[in-house]
Length: 353
Image 1 (tube, rainbow, N blue to C red):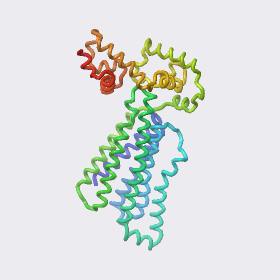
Image 2: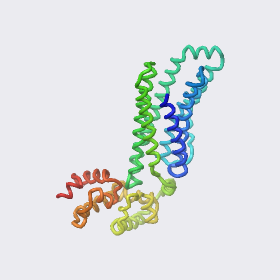
Image 3: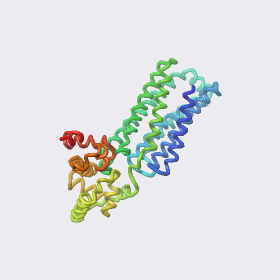
Image 4: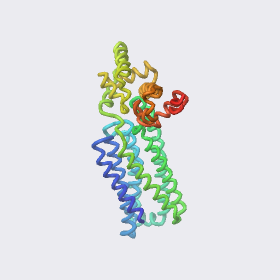
């Protein structure tokens, strides 16, 4: 029972954290996360109330079960706004709330008359198991759609960012896998209907998952900005090829002379602002003229620059990590991975040759 108090406090804290972040970064995703954590807090509070204050809990179950069906919907909306950067609710998302409404209507109907209530009480375990299985199926469907969005997102950000650390949303992948495991374990406990000590392990995993989510929510960078979003909406139907060639020369100049790639946070927006053009034109130029995405284009300059540092006797005092940061990479691991992919050897081995 102590775990329930810990979970309630932890989720309540996360709801305050996401609410405070909603005015700073990833506004709409954090708003949905605030609703999600607030509803989780309500679920835990209602469970505590049912445990300590109510002998008859069927009325509370109407609220609890309806809220449970909102959790997958809110998680989906949160991820959708992370990867799409829309600043309003879309009509196509209304069906996400239908399962919660249906569950609420059914449970209210089963509590209206004494006859219905008697049926509910005598078949409570069967109805409870049915609702749990339905919740898991609904969650699996939303998880599948979320994974598809995240895979598409991982491809899209390579055309926007030169450093994908903090924008790849890998932490959400991990949470989806963890939530899937939690649902399976929960289903097992419900079916077995045994009081077993594995419940403590289940609660422990849930606490760790919430702490993990909280850490990454605070660390999460803005994936898109207003300028990028607006220029993508207003894409040019026809691109002047002479203009593209002119911008290509300017691009080559600022890369070679100004070494703009040394900025680890260089993005398509920053580059387009520097060249006084739109993100669409820069993206078109890099994709068609160089046949690579923005991420590969910028990191090729960084790799070439890192090789010059590794071959420079005056830079021998620099560690591999130091060379990575001097070359504009956001982390040593990213540098090592891309360097080995490009040369077939590690930076340390290259340095010793």
